[in-house]
Every structure is written in structure tokens, then in C-alpha cells.
Length: 530
Image 1: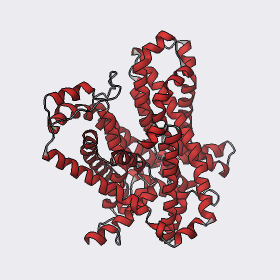
Image 2: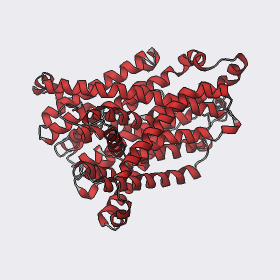
Image 3: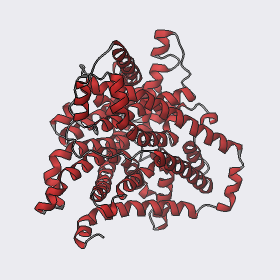
Image 4: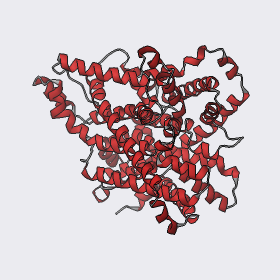
């Protein structure tokens, strides 16, 4: 059982996680108070609903499968090959995971659109609006995420196994079969579930590239029910259906997935040369080529409007800088709250890692933080707004609703950056801490040089995700609450595409600048440079 001293030490973390659960419960309960469950059976008989569910599942499965299928050879290549620009590519992968959705979509349109670069170079028109465009956008976002998650799996491989494989003259294929796959298959289920939930609940991508009702997802249907009809009953039903599908799917995958454990002996895995071959070089070349083609051209396309004569006029627009200020006022508090919540979850999880009576809790705590992806952000925001309205807060609460929902929606990414380093320090130094009586704040002071890179990465992810959000702000945005992504979407909707492209340059530049500052000043020089 937990001692009083342990409870006292964990009290801040328990309060943080408790507040997270309380706000989630209050949000959902407020929404369901306005619903009529007896009418839900009628929704189940609508053919349109099942068409939306089928397409949501189909595009999510395809997007997840393609992202992981491409990420596996790319991750293997990045582990075994050292080449010029490798560190820059990894940093680009980190940014592309959380680049503002509307900006990435604009870059994809410039590259693959009807008058895009791809059509001009090869004379082939890509059907961008529909399933193809949705898959392109999802792979652009999630393939880099899958690569980063698989690289974490490679960090679990003890150096001794690589050394033995090198001494035995293993080829790349033999090493993959007997060493890499054993560790990779432990990471793949969690990565698949995370990417599946991100794609299943996709909003801005489907709204922009769906091309019509035929390619709608449940998240878009929820937005339409709230924004245009303000039908809380239908929105709550759709939200509950989405939570059920995601939970059912995740439960099946985690049930059959092997346990993923950090090797306590691993400090930093040392790579050893394996037997190379022409076939291995060809596979690496093709994998890296696909990664470059998918990720780099949309980034380059985003910066094309810098040479436009309209770019300077856009920079002088007061509306642009008002949107920049609103975005910063939302993103910075949201990132700080998300990081604080992530630390609370991580502290609780690592406390349970080496204690037998709570040894099963770390995975459950991490899954609890990831479950926020199953609940639509629009539903959380609406329920929270209704709760605050019931206690006397009106439209003035919209800002805090947007901040809080952005914070909790970024939490899974924060946990992905924090959890591995927190687990590792617990396993390395727990016995030393116990023998010396080191606890709480003293532990943080000792561990800070070791975990600061993970903290910086987590804060950077939360900052960029909040800066690029277009879901909640699209629902609650008003004349005084227009962020950069919403301002950009309004320009595109008004067919001011050239001006919108200039705003996209400002948004992506702001993202890159803030991400660099977060990793440089929190993570230190090494993280910013590598």
C-alpha cells in the first residue's frame, strides 16, 4: 500500500491528473444532459451515418498502414546509415509531425494540385480532393511520427546484440529478422493505434481535401451538427459512437500486442557495422527517396509566396498581426498546461514502474492520457462551454475553453516525448535515490540535464499543435478571437488564395522559430543543433 510519505510526494501529480479527469467528466456530462438517448436508435437507422463510419474506418486503416509501411525501412535506414543532412532530416520529421494542418494542406495543393509542381513536371494530375488527397496528407503528417516512434524502439536494443551481429557477419536482412523485428513489433501496435486514432478523428484534412459529403468522417459530422445545427443530441451520439469504435479497436490491438519494456542496461546504444550489400543500399535509397518526396516538397512550396509582390503588403496588414497575437495568447498557455499535465502523468507512471503492487498501472496511466484522442475536441470544447455557462460564464469563457482543449489534445504527444526518458531515469537511479534518501525536487535537480531534451521536445510539440489548431477555434472563433490558422482558412474560403499563401509563410515561419527557441533554450545547444 502507498505510505503517507509517498502520497505526500505524489500529491501535486495526483491533483493534476485528478483535475484532468474532473474537467473531462464535467465536459461530457454537460453535453449528455442536453441529449436525448431515446432518440439515438433513429440515428442508427440512417444510411448516411454508416457510410461515414465505413469511410472513417477505411481511410484511417489505409493511412495508418501506409505510414507504418513506409516508416519501417526509413527508420532502419536512419539507424544504419550516416549521411550528410541526417540530423536535419530528423529535425524536419519532428516539425512535420506537428506542422499546422491548414499550412501543410496548402503546401500539398501547390505540389499536387491541378496546376501544381507535380503536374507541371510529369504531366500527371493527382486527384487531390477525395481519398487520395486525404491519404497524402495523413502520410505527410504520420509517417514522420511513425519513424520517431520506431527509432524509440531501436533505442531499446542493447549494444551487445549489435556487436554480436557484427562479429557474426549479419547482413541487414538477417539483422532485421533476428534483432530489429523483435523490438520493432513491440512498438508497432502502440504506434498503429496512435496514428489510427489521429486519422480516424481527422478534421481539418477531411474538411479541406474531402471534396464533399461522400468523404466525410465522424469528426466532420460532429462539427456540422454543432456548428450549423447546434444539435447537441446528435453530436453527443456521434461522439459516443466515435469513443466506442476507438476504444474497441485499441482494446483489441493492445490485447494482442507484446509488452514494451525499456532495457535497464541501455544508456546509449552503440551502432556496429553490418555486412552491406547492393540490395540493402537500393532499399535504403528507395525508402529515403520516398520520404524526401513526401515531406520536403510541401515544405518548400509553403515558402514560394516569399517572392510574391503581395507578400510585403500582407505583412503590413493589421489583421495578420492581430491573428499572430491571438495565436500566441492561445498557444503558449496551452503548451505550458499540456507540459504540466504530461509531467503529472509521467511522475505517477514512473512511480509505479518498479513497485510490484502497482506494476500494472504505468501502461494504464499512459493509455488514460492517450484516450483524449478518442474523444472529439469539438465535443470536449462544447461540453466545457456549456458547463461554464451554467456557472455564470458566458462567451468570455471561449478563450479558456480553446486553451484547455488545445492543451489536452496535445497531451498524447507530450507523453510520447516524456515517458521514455522518465522511465529510463527511474530504472537507472531508483536504488541510488532510495539509499541516499533523494526525493521530489532534489530528484528533478539531479535529473534535469538528462531529461531536459525530452521536456523541450514535449513543450515544442504542444506549442506547435496549439499554434496550428483549427478545430476548436473554428467552432468558437469570433471577431475578437481569430487565430492565424482560422484567418488563413477564412482567406482561402474567400478565394484570396495568394494572400492566404503569404499568411501560411508567416505561420510556418512562426512555428519553426518557436520550435527552435523551445528546443534551444529548454533542451540546450545539443538538441537545437542536432
